[in-house]
Picture 1: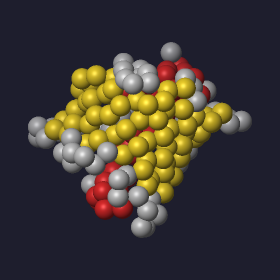
Picture 2: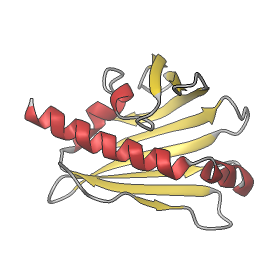
Picture 3: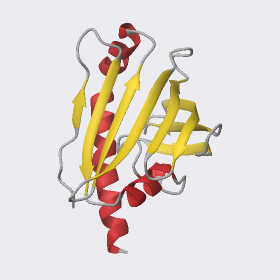
Length: 161
């Protein structure tokens, strides 16, 4: 299994977060598991939450909405719109937590082929430093690390089948 580290950068005083992780997969394999609604609940979010996809239409102008639910019934709903979808290369989308309406970020995910696999680089721009800081303080780093680890596990499992 892939044990590459996830690098999260959230410099103080800036409204963005960057995440980088390398995977033992092709850009096509990573893109597929990240964008196919069959696979998304298997990797997106912390392990202790269950995910329900209400909509996940990965195409320019398509939208998504999903709910993460904790064991005690707490729900976290997220939504957005896909703006650019270049298969195996690039996805640009908006991201909004419905618990903080109007705090929409713009996210860019790029898939770069490497000698050993693929490098995923995401860059999320928040509307303000304050909203970015609120996301960081909400435990976002934990959720990102869990998601990236689950994604690596899913890719390894798909490779075996």
